[in-house]
Amino acid sequence: MRYLTGLLILLILLLAGCQWAAMSPPPPRPEPEPIAVAPPSSPLLASAQQALARDDLAGAEGYLERAIRLDSRNPLLWHTLAQTKYRQGDYPQTIQLGRRSNALLPPNSSLHRENLRLMAAAHRQLGQEEQARKLEAEL
Image 1: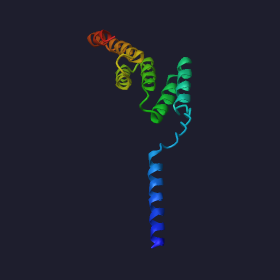
Image 2 (image 1 turned 45 degrees about the vertical axis):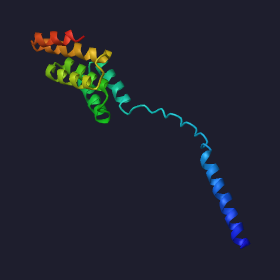
Image 3 (image 1 turned 60 degrees about the vertical axis):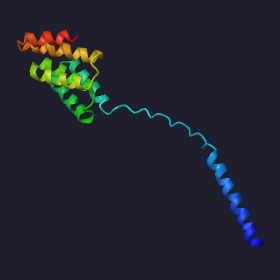
Image 4 (image 1 turned 120 degrees about the vertical axis):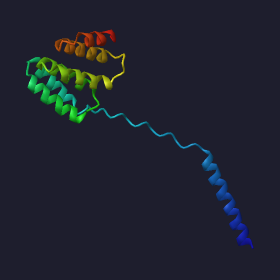
């Protein structure tokens, strides 16, 4: 009988300890340090911009297409490719790429407005003055 009483007391103490442990908050975890990783498309964008500066439009296009394969949600890559296409005289593609870039941007951003300007210029080159004016009205 004493054995059962001792076991019962031990069980009660054990359960009381478990309840106390459950009531205390867990120790705070340290915040993980942010990992600074440059996007893999950054060096390609820099190379494309250098190629554009020296009028190597085909080279810039190649760099940008590779960068877009790595980071297709980057509106700056689409915008820069649109600029390249404009300089190559491919105005319909300029408009499409500008739209693609704008789809990834908030409407009040400066890059969104720059895309609108570029698309309006492309429409003008195609003789589509009305579409150009509509885009400029959004500025």
